[in-house]
Amino acid sequence: MGKKPWTSKAWQLDIKGEFEPEAPDPDKPTARVPYWIPLVISRAEVAQLLAAPDLTEVERLFLRTLYGSGIRPKELALLEPQNIDTALGALRFGERVALLDRETIQALSELDWDRWNWPMSRMKDVLRRAARSCAVAKRYTAMGRKLLPQALRIAFATHSLENGSGLFALHNMLGYPYLSDTQMVIEIAVGLWRGVYDQTHPLATNRLIRGGSKQAELTYEDVLAMMEAAGDGPNHTHDNLILRTIYAAGLRVNELTQLLVADVELDERRLFIRQAKGAKDRYTLIDKGTAELLRPIVAGQPQDTVVFPVLDSRIRQFIDRAAKKTGLKEKFDNLGETLSPHTFRHAHATHLYAAGMDPVIIKKLLGHASVEETMGYVACGPVQWREAYDRCHLLG
Image (cartoon, rainbow, N blue to C red):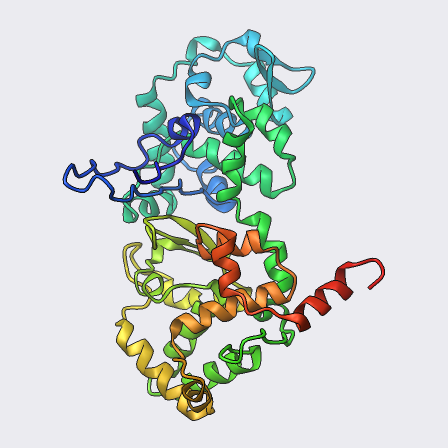
């Protein structure tokens, strides 16, 4: 049987209803089940939701409480004055403590509780009205997802972890039965990896990275030369950015050609890759330069617009043309190898690893099933081991 979408019942409850998985095909009992991950509302989008016009103060307090504490919508609906600990600045549910900012706690303590009536239908209505004032609703619709109150709980968990919250403390606040449930947040908390990405990816550091141990591997200088050569063609800006995006994000070519405007989150510098190889969702990162080059392309476009409306075959054609111009085609041909879009994905992995990124993070960015698969991408030999030893060992 294929892998279930989120192995944890607790996680499935938190994202239940955001998407409608297709019913299993009885004629294909071994078909892989899609591995969905929830969309994450960005910090900027949360700020827009909280500042949405035409909300009453109680409705705004509802949004602040959900996002500020990370409690479940059902828990918020059943919230009573005795759950509020004003001294600690928290909501208490038995032994569980959900911390909250002082302003929201104070507002809850002064609330007329006769007005605190929150059936799920009202929660959804308030969130929809708030989302209409920004691009959040359009992004969810373009990606075939539903914006539900649980999204604010997911945002709380993700943003807390990215801002330095300990996993165990977050686990206690969320109230999951097992620590493994909370660890699922790491799958979507790409901000945890951004600092490492910014310190390791050559496009972010502008540092020359020694190539791998394989001869049929692109060095960073080769990548720059290929991008420059692609930029001399008839669609120079477009072709250059295609190569840059593949290399910056480590994309498969079909992931690039299926990328929608809704998938590009420029302020967070991340891309949402939907139903890629193995029917898996994932997030990956891009550098500031790539984000700024993408900005005018996606600005003002409908959320369901394809960012790069180009055939795989045309990408291969201009890569081949650039390879001839740089002399890399002859090098690869002599080695019996082909320089393709996937070569840039391999270079992405190799250069991140050579610069010191943990292979577990590289695995998540690439969307691999195992670290072993990732290490098969990485061209690493004794020279790289020597550099890693000198960089990390106390006696090095």
